[in-house]
Image 1: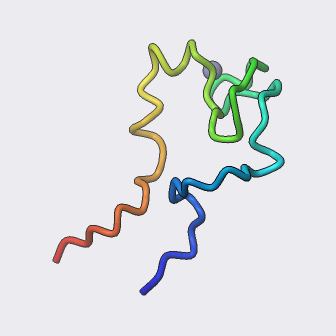
Image 2 (image 1 turned 180 degrees about the vertical axis):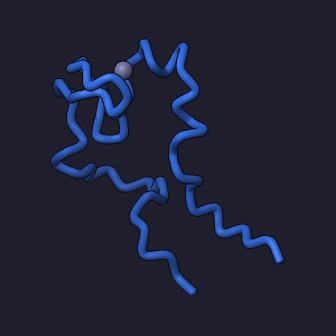
Length: 66
Ligand SMILES: [Zn+2]
């Protein structure tokens, strides 16, 4: 089966128009910070201290345990 998730890091020079450095609200503390790109949804403060990774859903690695 093919994954419909466009999260694969394709070497495509054309990035999403949303993937631009701008100010975004942190998903953790709602603090508006300077985001490097669309994938940057957590402020550096939360990234460095909080365990935000455990709260996020696992990425589609394609590994299925039986
Ligand atoms: Zn934050």
